[in-house]
Length: 225
Image (cartoon, rainbow, N blue to C red; front, top):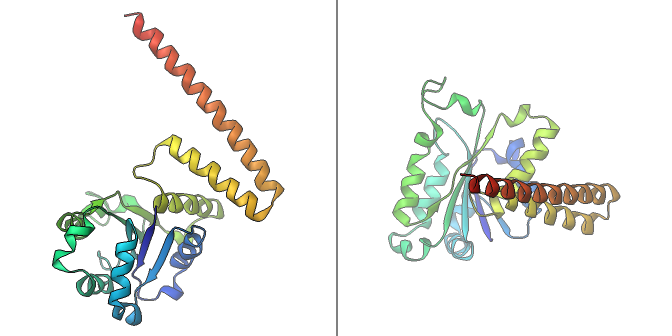
């Protein structure tokens, strides 16, 4: 799936979160990265072409004063036209938002009092107006405090969010991970990656066999009644 990531950040070069995501997005050839600034705002024809060419559109930003940065709304104002619903309605809209607190803070009764869903609802209303299919948002919390292990998990989850149909089931995650590791093996020619891949494939086969056995047991149990 071809994906356009529209990044709105007031100081993107100073953002460790956005630089990490940018390097991650480079791994996928099907992802186009668009940073919003004074130059890209003026490139209306190019921006509209990118919207036409990509099936999934991602709005990516830090939550600032409980909303997306103003430059995202300015980009929308000058890029989207009223009759664009006719060709946008077959596309998807995703939201990648990074926050400085735990996601648990953004809920009724939490320290921030309001849920992320309610704070992001204007973008949901936009998707509804344009006929875009809104996929579940992707949250990155407290990136600066994440361990290396957590960041590796984030890398995989972020790539899957950009590339796979949403919501993702376990089987699709497995197939994607195996394909991803195979591509790394070819590109890097790394024996350790090969070892991880072989082990992952073996585990996937075992899980598949276990699922088959569980399904058979369920059928037997159903026949007992």
